[in-house]
Image (cartoon, rainbow, N blue to C red; front, side):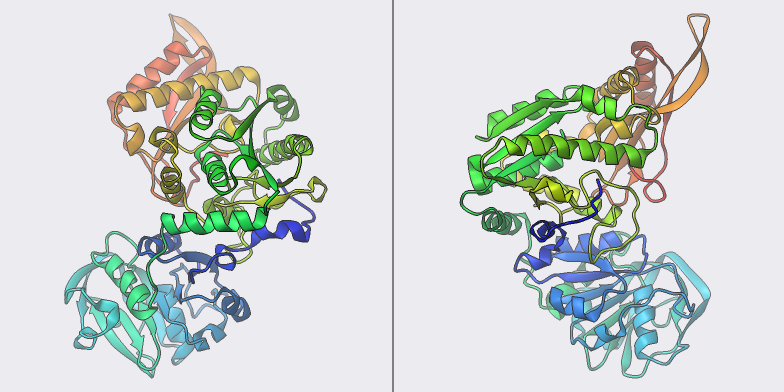
Length: 539
């Protein structure tokens, strides 16, 4: 959903976590690296809150965020290209520790050194290579616990060819004499290799050293502390009498958000599950069972399948689907809120990847990959203040939080389900017959994954119904029926993902069952696209 206006009372949702809780973050400046999400992930794994921000974030905003350190990511550009992305040069004078990675190293050396010191390398380095620490690195805090020789991951065509004045070299590789550098009078480091990827043997050690030994981060950011602070924040925002309407979509994210609200304000949260006719098989019963068995909160179920299908009639554009679904959700929540005394807030299970992909973060990357139905503010006439308690978390962090809150492991471990539901997995027109085909095929796929013991070993799996028919032969007769695509990915953070290498026998069994048991399907395909370049969902 989109909004043309957002009253002051609703702006709290657009603030970063660092505006609302006490831990000082490390800011990761995004210069377009495919690994930028990994930098934030690794920092959080080291117990430090990390937030991804625009590469050109003004120094005034950086001061407001009060970071404990800055990390400049890699990127595909060349610093000597006039159109290359650059940061506000004043950040180098903040006195805050800085770590430049790959392009980030080249950028800071170009900004603080002699122009022209970064040039195309005579030999490009891609993949694993040997890193040799120099004697100057022996007592440097960045390389504490790192052996003199180790394997690192390189991915660059340019390199720093001239050591800037005031810097010293710390490491080299076979084809890169300046693989790591440091400014002698300030804690500003550059690494030509990528410490954030698993192929760099001591990458986590190096990043942890930067955070704990250089930035002096306390390393105490975890789900336990997040939970405590989130509860405090919710109680402060809602007050002693306010009530919250929490929308449940059927997925894990909204369920964890509701559980967090229940912990914070008890029965003053009213959960609303909208059965929009776009849920997976058994989804409604699973959500009802999880909440009524584990939380003493009011749960209202709205049967609205006909209204959603009517609103989606004839719509095939995925963005339009999301927008229409979002608007109807808001209408239903508004009606529910009007019947609840002191209901002044609407809670949603928005996650950090949702914010990033929607271009919804005020300080984050601006590119919009897709419109998330629950990102983008609320219509002014709704009269409710938005609460998004998970807005700054990755998917696996939400699952950990769900366990902390007491949700059953089977529920928290369920694969993600998009807020717009099967509407964005039913490509083309959203019709009852096509939804039933998709629902049955999806249930077979998940059932066989569980039977094979692979459901918990994959990040997300589902079926997609294409708006494509093909010729088949069934019972010696010609068919012209629908096509199902199976999608399964392996991922930790859902910002990047690799397609699952499922056993061929399993895929064959799933295909046979779908064709035999789901009328109207005569062809099954398997999606072998990773993210990037594709997204996990098809729409």
